[in-house]
Length: 197
Image 1 (tube, rainbow, N blue to C red):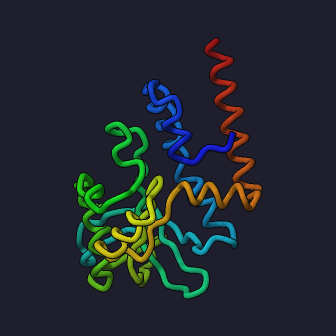
Image 2 (cartoon, rainbow, N blue to C red):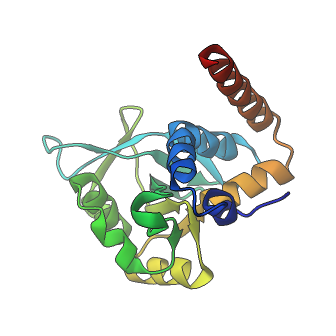
Protein backbone atom coordinates (compact mmCIF):
# COMPACT_ATOMS: atom_id res chain seq x y z
CA UNK A 1 0.00 0.00 0.00
CA UNK A 2 1.25 3.49 -0.85
CA UNK A 3 1.03 5.65 2.30
CA UNK A 4 1.74 9.36 2.55
CA UNK A 5 4.61 10.42 4.82
CA UNK A 6 2.22 11.30 7.63
CA UNK A 7 0.00 8.22 7.16
CA UNK A 8 2.96 5.87 7.31
CA UNK A 9 4.34 7.11 10.62
CA UNK A 10 0.91 7.51 12.21
CA UNK A 11 -0.26 4.09 10.99
CA UNK A 12 -1.62 2.00 13.81
CA UNK A 13 -1.72 5.15 15.92
CA UNK A 14 -2.58 3.17 19.04
CA UNK A 15 0.93 1.74 18.93
CA UNK A 16 3.17 4.67 20.00
CA UNK A 17 6.20 2.42 20.45
CA UNK A 18 6.17 1.74 16.69
CA UNK A 19 6.14 5.44 15.82
CA UNK A 20 8.92 6.23 18.27
CA UNK A 21 11.10 3.39 17.00
CA UNK A 22 10.60 4.16 13.30
CA UNK A 23 11.13 7.89 13.87
CA UNK A 24 14.48 7.25 15.49
CA UNK A 25 15.59 4.82 12.80
CA UNK A 26 14.53 7.26 10.06
CA UNK A 27 16.37 10.09 11.80
CA UNK A 28 19.66 8.19 11.58
CA UNK A 29 19.81 8.47 7.78
CA UNK A 30 17.29 11.15 6.75
CA UNK A 31 20.02 13.73 6.01
CA UNK A 32 21.54 11.24 3.58
CA UNK A 33 18.26 11.21 1.61
CA UNK A 34 18.46 14.99 1.22
CA UNK A 35 22.05 14.72 -0.07
CA UNK A 36 21.02 12.04 -2.58
CA UNK A 37 18.11 14.22 -3.77
CA UNK A 38 20.32 17.29 -4.19
CA UNK A 39 22.90 15.20 -6.10
CA UNK A 40 20.26 14.33 -8.69
CA UNK A 41 20.29 16.82 -11.58
CA UNK A 42 16.46 16.79 -11.58
CA UNK A 43 16.38 18.44 -8.15
CA UNK A 44 16.04 22.24 -8.20
CA UNK A 45 19.06 22.62 -5.90
CA UNK A 46 22.60 21.23 -5.73
CA UNK A 47 24.25 20.61 -2.36
CA UNK A 48 27.55 22.45 -1.83
CA UNK A 49 28.25 21.12 1.69
CA UNK A 50 27.70 22.10 5.31
CA UNK A 51 27.82 25.85 6.02
CA UNK A 52 29.24 27.56 9.07
CA UNK A 53 27.78 30.98 9.93
CA UNK A 54 29.67 33.77 11.69
CA UNK A 55 28.85 37.42 12.28
CA UNK A 56 32.54 38.33 12.22
CA UNK A 57 35.85 36.63 11.41
CA UNK A 58 36.45 35.94 15.09
CA UNK A 59 32.81 35.29 15.99
CA UNK A 60 31.31 32.07 17.25
CA UNK A 61 30.42 29.69 14.43
CA UNK A 62 27.12 27.90 13.88
CA UNK A 63 27.19 24.90 11.56
CA UNK A 64 23.99 24.06 9.68
CA UNK A 65 22.98 21.04 7.60
CA UNK A 66 23.40 22.05 3.95
CA UNK A 67 24.29 24.81 1.51
CA UNK A 68 22.05 24.69 -1.57
CA UNK A 69 22.66 26.36 -4.91
CA UNK A 70 19.66 26.85 -7.17
CA UNK A 71 20.38 25.09 -10.47
CA UNK A 72 18.80 27.84 -12.60
CA UNK A 73 19.53 31.12 -10.78
CA UNK A 74 22.80 29.96 -9.13
CA UNK A 75 21.68 31.71 -5.94
CA UNK A 76 23.00 30.11 -2.76
CA UNK A 77 21.09 29.39 0.47
CA UNK A 78 21.96 28.02 3.89
CA UNK A 79 19.69 25.12 4.78
CA UNK A 80 18.53 23.72 8.12
CA UNK A 81 16.56 20.49 8.42
CA UNK A 82 14.09 19.78 11.21
CA UNK A 83 12.25 16.46 11.06
CA UNK A 84 10.54 15.64 14.32
CA UNK A 85 8.09 12.87 13.65
CA UNK A 86 6.50 11.41 16.78
CA UNK A 87 7.84 14.03 19.20
CA UNK A 88 5.07 15.32 21.51
CA UNK A 89 2.46 13.12 19.83
CA UNK A 90 3.35 14.23 16.27
CA UNK A 91 2.94 17.92 17.19
CA UNK A 92 5.78 19.04 14.88
CA UNK A 93 5.59 16.42 12.15
CA UNK A 94 3.55 18.50 9.68
CA UNK A 95 4.41 22.19 9.44
CA UNK A 96 1.09 24.00 9.58
CA UNK A 97 1.99 27.28 11.28
CA UNK A 98 5.03 29.42 12.05
CA UNK A 99 4.44 28.94 15.78
CA UNK A 100 5.85 25.40 15.43
CA UNK A 101 9.32 26.86 14.85
CA UNK A 102 9.38 28.62 18.21
CA UNK A 103 10.34 25.59 20.30
CA UNK A 104 13.71 25.50 18.50
CA UNK A 105 15.70 27.70 20.86
CA UNK A 106 19.29 26.79 20.01
CA UNK A 107 21.55 29.57 18.82
CA UNK A 108 22.23 27.84 15.50
CA UNK A 109 18.53 27.88 14.59
CA UNK A 110 18.20 31.52 15.66
CA UNK A 111 21.19 32.32 13.43
CA UNK A 112 19.60 30.38 10.57
CA UNK A 113 16.38 32.42 10.87
CA UNK A 114 18.40 35.64 10.96
CA UNK A 115 20.19 34.69 7.72
CA UNK A 116 16.76 34.32 6.10
CA UNK A 117 16.11 38.05 6.66
CA UNK A 118 19.61 39.52 7.04
CA UNK A 119 21.89 37.33 4.92
CA UNK A 120 24.31 40.18 4.16
CA UNK A 121 25.15 40.57 7.87
CA UNK A 122 26.56 37.04 8.10
CA UNK A 123 29.83 35.47 6.94
CA UNK A 124 29.16 31.99 5.58
CA UNK A 125 31.86 29.39 4.99
CA UNK A 126 31.25 26.18 3.06
CA UNK A 127 34.16 23.71 2.95
CA UNK A 128 36.22 26.48 4.68
CA UNK A 129 35.67 28.83 1.73
CA UNK A 130 33.68 32.03 2.24
CA UNK A 131 30.38 31.79 0.35
CA UNK A 132 28.05 34.62 -0.56
CA UNK A 133 24.50 33.56 0.27
CA UNK A 134 21.12 34.90 -0.79
CA UNK A 135 19.06 33.64 2.13
CA UNK A 136 17.87 30.46 3.82
CA UNK A 137 15.80 27.35 3.11
CA UNK A 138 14.02 25.23 5.70
CA UNK A 139 13.54 21.47 5.35
CA UNK A 140 10.72 19.93 7.43
CA UNK A 141 9.18 16.45 7.60
CA UNK A 142 5.93 17.43 5.88
CA UNK A 143 3.92 20.64 5.50
CA UNK A 144 0.50 21.92 4.58
CA UNK A 145 0.32 24.43 1.72
CA UNK A 146 -0.81 27.11 4.15
CA UNK A 147 1.95 26.26 6.61
CA UNK A 148 4.60 26.44 3.91
CA UNK A 149 3.26 29.77 2.61
CA UNK A 150 3.01 31.31 6.08
CA UNK A 151 6.49 30.23 7.14
CA UNK A 152 8.02 31.67 3.98
CA UNK A 153 6.12 34.95 4.45
CA UNK A 154 6.85 35.31 8.16
CA UNK A 155 10.46 34.10 8.35
CA UNK A 156 11.78 35.34 5.02
CA UNK A 157 12.96 31.84 4.05
CA UNK A 158 13.28 31.47 0.30
CA UNK A 159 11.71 28.01 0.32
CA UNK A 160 10.32 25.29 2.58
CA UNK A 161 11.11 21.80 1.29
CA UNK A 162 9.69 18.66 2.87
CA UNK A 163 11.21 15.23 3.28
CA UNK A 164 7.86 13.96 2.07
CA UNK A 165 8.43 15.73 -1.28
CA UNK A 166 12.07 14.62 -1.43
CA UNK A 167 11.12 10.96 -0.96
CA UNK A 168 8.32 11.27 -3.50
CA UNK A 169 10.78 12.76 -6.04
CA UNK A 170 13.42 10.07 -5.47
CA UNK A 171 10.86 7.30 -5.89
CA UNK A 172 9.34 8.92 -8.99
CA UNK A 173 12.78 9.40 -10.56
CA UNK A 174 13.80 5.81 -9.74
CA UNK A 175 16.99 7.35 -8.38
CA UNK A 176 19.55 4.56 -8.40
CA UNK A 177 21.62 5.83 -5.45
CA UNK A 178 18.46 6.13 -3.34
CA UNK A 179 17.41 2.57 -4.17
CA UNK A 180 20.87 1.22 -3.28
CA UNK A 181 20.95 3.07 0.05
CA UNK A 182 17.42 1.98 1.03
CA UNK A 183 18.07 -1.65 0.08
CA UNK A 184 21.34 -1.56 2.03
CA UNK A 185 19.62 -0.20 5.17
CA UNK A 186 16.86 -2.79 4.77
CA UNK A 187 19.48 -5.55 4.63
CA UNK A 188 21.29 -4.20 7.70
CA UNK A 189 18.08 -4.06 9.71
CA UNK A 190 17.21 -7.60 8.67
CA UNK A 191 20.69 -8.78 9.66
CA UNK A 192 20.40 -7.06 13.04
CA UNK A 193 17.07 -8.67 13.88
CA UNK A 194 18.22 -12.07 12.60
CA UNK A 195 21.22 -11.78 14.92
CA UNK A 196 18.98 -10.80 17.86
CA UNK A 197 16.69 -13.77 17.28
